[in-house]
Length: 360
Image 1 (cartoon, rainbow, N blue to C red):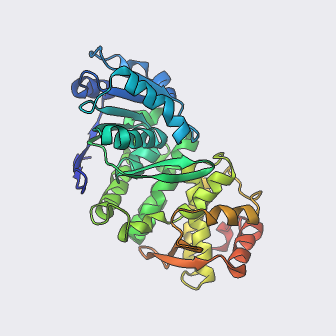
Image 2 (tube, helix red, strand yellow):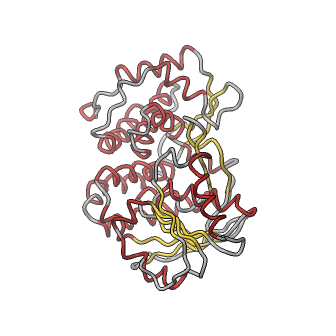
Image 3 (cartoon, rainbow, N blue to C red):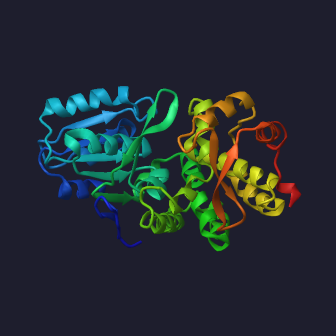
């Protein structure tokens, strides 16, 4: 895997693949830089913070959705200001997507912007969110309602962190990465589908999917960093997925929820004659493996409808969904929350969640 540069309107940034996070921290940290680290990562890898610099504040956080909110950020910002953190100092985030959002959002607002580095420790962060510039925090019960675009100055990807992830964490990461491979086209999707069961056990093979996932995302980010046009196809599965996360109080991990979201988007696409049943079932075969063990049958249609109506991508009362016409043919479509659409949601939740493998 080669290192690469992501071109950004804000500031170009490096993505580096490394083998020793402790050594990299020793080399990169300056005095008075502050480390924001997921407490679970801190406990699992106590040695990485045993670094030569003595003047670095470390702030451990509980990486929960409630922490990723205005209220959750207050004690972190208070610690930074009280410690003497200044405009010329940097924040170093070590953790998954929640840690990334917290570090990025604070970096973007404190003293009108400071530099920050990111060490992603989850598959979801390494294969997706570590590039792209987005920062998001939650507002009340609604996910990712507030944020902006503020890329890190450097990203350091250490695959050794994946050794401590559970199978559920790996599946969540793969569920998120999957949508890039569908967007990219049939060849990429077939590669992902064929390697899916193998990468759960083979980290070297998994590294290849991570690299390809970032390549796909990079190609869109560099032409539409602020998510106005082309990049919006990466919301595929996410409107429905975010609603599922909210309605299950985040008991269903993000990538698992997105895998359900992609299937719902495909189901709607079939109803609108955009997508054939055969392609939907081909994709569904893989998605069922990703979400295996998680159930959304208890979600009510009324609550699902209300959660979708709060999606930040909506325009007025119109839903802005990403639908599918086939591999590499994902597109944005406006959708009214009318009786027909609500009926499709009800049909999906009531009768479309049985396994479809035998239909192929």
